Amino acid sequence: MIREATERGEFDNLPGMGKPLDLSDADDPDWWVKRKIRDENLDSSALLPAPLQLRKEAQGFPESLKQIADEQAVRDLLTDFNRRVREAHLSTRAGMPTMITAHTVDVEDMIRRWRELRENRK
Figure 1 (tube, rainbow, N blue to C red):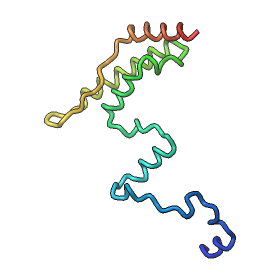
Figure 2 (figure 1 turned 90 degrees about the horizontal axis):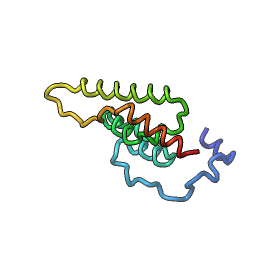
Figure 3 (figure 1 turned 30 degrees about the vertical axis):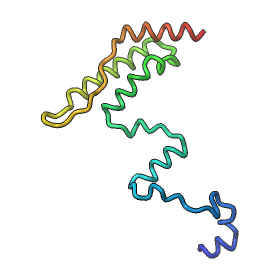
Figure 4 (figure 1 turned 135 degrees about the vertical axis):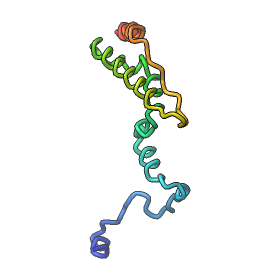
């Protein structure tokens, strides 16, 4: 099959043809995942442990909310965020090292800041 594909020219003009392979990270078992994330500019935050995901999410507030037009949707999102933070705090096990999780957010303060962002957008 390979010989036939070669004869048909299916391997001609492939990207990187004639260039050496980059094996600089071959000792890393996750090399292919890291390359895929880098090459396709993917968001890798989903790979983080839950406490770090929550912290990253909190750092985006209120900017990450400004595209949401409905106040109740923003309120629901922030309430859900606080619920997930509380669950993360409760899920730590005694005697186990814990990561510092995000803190809950003041929903009313964040709504006020969201409104300001929406008004400044106009």
